[in-house]
Amino acid sequence: MPLELLSNKVQVESGRPPLLFIHGMWHAAWIWESRFFSLFAERGYRTYALSLPHHGKSSGPKSLNRLRIRDYVNCLRQIIEALHEEPVLVGHSMGGFVVQKYLEKYRAPAAVLLASVPPFGLLKATWRYVKKFPLAFLKANLSLNLAHVVNTLPRYRYLFSSPGFSEADLLAYMQKAQSESFLAYVDMLGLDLAKARKTDTPLLVIGGAEDRAVSVEEVRKTAERYGVEPVIFPQMGHNLMLEPQSEKVVELMSAWLEEL
Image 1 (tube, rainbow, N blue to C red):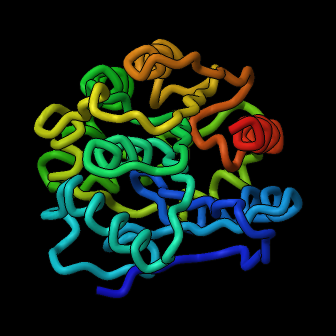
Image 2: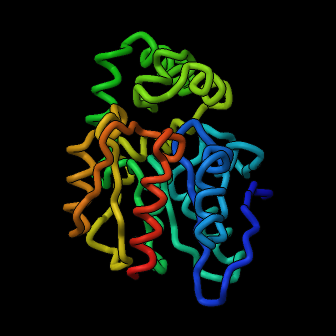
Image 3: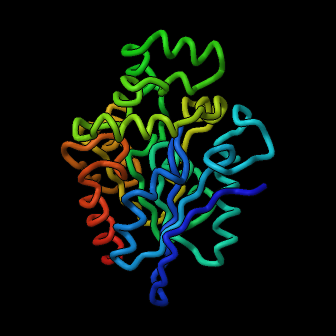
């Protein structure tokens, strides 16, 4: 099962673990390339970005809608074993949830949850979206095609961006967006929630104050479940790795990793 794995190909000194990025719903490995790859390269980090099955250029053994969160976890494990070194895991949104589920069974040198789906799921986030775009949500459910959640500029902007994004950039990102597994979404609604008490991997939990997909309250509650203090960036939305001020996020992550 070929999986897309992008890298910034930086050669680093021995002893510094690489970073492995896991994207969120509707996106793929490309979301990390434009900013995080180069910003971490400047700081001497080798980075990888995985496209989960049927995202980006990755294929899969099942159709997209039949994939479960556990399938994504298994693919993450497959990639980690192929790297022959344990990476720091950086999961965004659904990718953060995948990291949490991975850490129920395995350990990592460290992990970063960026605007992560909370361990208690997406019910509140779904309700916020339904109140804003009820017809789009109905269409997505009737067709079992979650692309309808994000396939217009107003809907994409609502979920992913702060006011700092240009319309041209947003349009380019939206045009790369795709559908998402309906079963994976149902897992995150409540069918297969994360067991926060099971991990002892060092965690950094980060959110954006302008995030309408995962609220500041949900980021704080996620951090509380893991016994850490969250970091909330003002004037940033859900897609922290694409924000005009994303270098501030990288600076924080780098400083935290150096302390470890």
